[in-house]
Image (cartoon, rainbow, N blue to C red; front, side, top):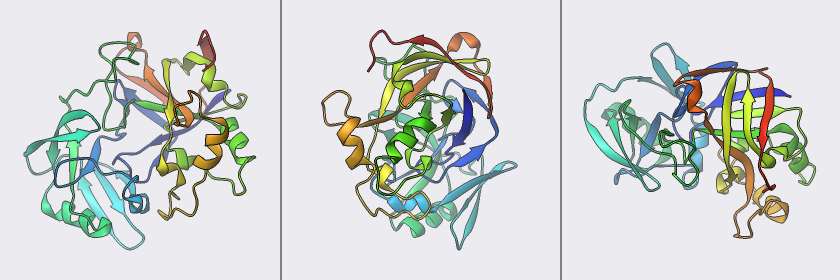
Length: 276
């Protein structure tokens, strides 16, 4: 039972990067969703409305991000030249962020065909995890939807794919951490786990949206799968939502920083009192 994938998504809702190892802090993996595209009202853009975002890849090179499509590339320095700070919105959260300049913003606007700008979360910005699910009042998150880590299980995907006419890859679920060697949906029963030397609390099943129907290479949506099939056996609470994967927060008693490597052992330290 081990960690089989580590993935980050430096710019929210753009294509991810697979890593062999990564540092992390209370907000999540290093570089994960520290940048975000916002519209003219400073609201966040995602693949829910703009599936073409999946066609833009990102790599990290020295002190820059490189955004690319099949035809173009764009270098984005880690630190914006502009010192302008604005308040941006992620769901119900208001977060202070630094804005990039016109050259970078126009590049994204042209590809996505919507006026938008790139922002970076300030180091001093604080965005709290929903206190209903936080383990510590200090639990924070970056520009991710709500939690600093999303974990999925290879066996759960295999189970889902056995029910689909056409199997889908794990990237449809955009996880940070993927584990191998467990039974399908074993993760539903976990409360606390240890990955390598790092402890994580399993705080909430991840409800899934239309992004899971989006091909993460082409941006196409050819069917309602996997949501249609998930609705048949993964509607855990009878409220119409469907679930795949688990949201985690890091155990703060281990310190601010941590480190994970692909191949790290995964151990379940504590189970939920009743299976969700």
